[in-house]
Length: 140
Image (cartoon, rainbow, N blue to C red):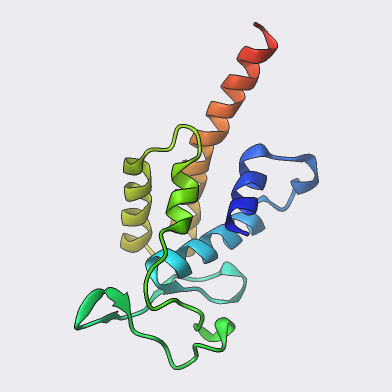
């Protein structure tokens, strides 16, 4: 699902007009849950709430009491997943440094507006690169 949402945002198909912000909120929700261990309020609103890390192993997250109820903050993996990072890193013009900057920004400022802006900035790099390639292919 994550890769489909990324593709839809970057390629900007006509059917998606008016849905861009909703799709970016889905992207934010999936990324924050799987990679950063943050839960969001329903609908992608509000700040990301950070799950506490396991004191014995900082690479793991403590499982919440509402693990079976994703809309109440559950559904966060105990171990963060790298799959969303891998998908983003395979996009043209996205480097590991871009992903590290995204992660740092998402953990420093967890407000919805700030996190959505971070994703928009990252995906605009890809979109601009693809538009340049399209322009060059039309006039070459």
